[in-house]
Amino acid sequence: MSVVLSAPVAMAETAVKADVKAGTSSKTSTAAKAKTYTEDEFLNAFSGKSRKFITDKLGAPAKKDLAVKPANADRMVMGMGKTDDKTKRVNIEMWYYNDVVKYDAKRTYKFAELTFVNDRCMNIGFFNNN
Image (cartoon, rainbow, N blue to C red; front, side, top):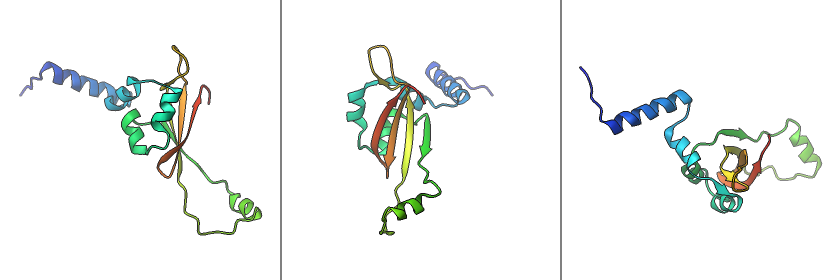
């Protein structure tokens, strides 16, 4: 039994297969490559926004990191006068996007770092080196 695909379906199937080989999805790669932002546009568009909003606009990040509490942090904080042990746990996560923010007409920053505190983007940084 043979299956005949129309040209658009066959092309879409080929694109998906190429993305699977490359380890990306066409939705993510086109969303990330579709637009670059100036520094101000990026800050205004994504400051204070949720992870879902940012994922919808920029796609999946190139890299994710979690903030880790140092081993002796409790001792250090107690020595500084910490009295309240009933504080809520804070989840801090950093997402990194590549080449989405431009700093002049021809060049972009290598990395844009978005720091999330409890699902909200609270800090944004642009870097050209690790």
